[in-house]
Image 1: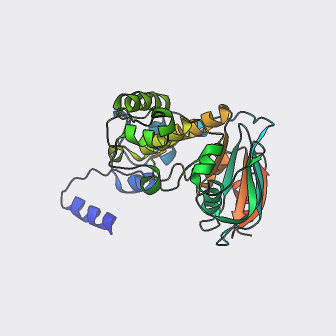
Image 2 (image 1 turned 60 degrees about the vertical axis):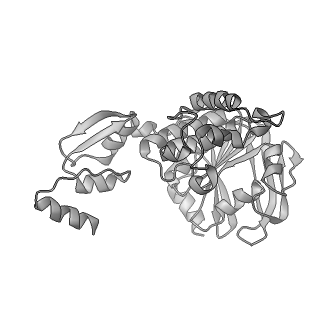
Image 3 (image 1 turned 90 degrees about the horizontal axis):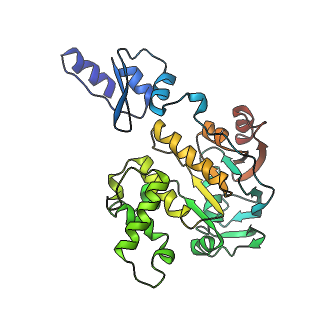
Length: 315
């Protein structure tokens, strides 16, 4: 209906600027395309009849074939060990797997398969009825997120605006919330300490914003970086990211992918949950597939293809 109205008004002589993350829409509705990156015009196309791949490469600044960063081999040391984990609400049952230091484990499955419920249970956000979670060989008592954080488990939730950032607070305040034991060890939160801490985190993650800028004024990609920066500062042993690029444009996705790869390169164990199958395959050393609350298999990178994953996900 929107496109129909645009075409009708265009025929009457009205001009349009159409801005969208959905590149198929732009290719289908536009006459000309201008591509911006980091506040600058980087490409102009006098026709919309160009491959979407070309637009993506303009936005990212590199070939689509290099969208996903290279992965380093993980270490032998096991960081996370999950045994026979079962939720209280039966959203998943008898799940067992491990993640090594420097490894990215992707979790794939159809929506409603139990992926988010599983990682929320590992972080202590949801209760379990059976099973154990161990970090560096020590069993974690899953009685709440605080216990998981003390054990070195952190998570970027799937809905950053509802669960990840407080939109009307500043970047500095958001970063301080997860690190008050470091910033305010004496019990007092000093503005200068928050500012210094925030500026270091902003520089480390390349966040485009000031420490005193409200998080709600940031783009989706920069909001996601704020959530990641909040937890990197601890630093954790296991970093979980649920739908890390949901609602983020393709240019910002590449930056988030680099951040995730850097987490693994630094020796952290990483879990990535995503509905984007290409994302899971491109980022992961191994892929675990869940279907209807049950673990259907774990595929090594060499054998993890779209077909192989979907066969397990629909079983």
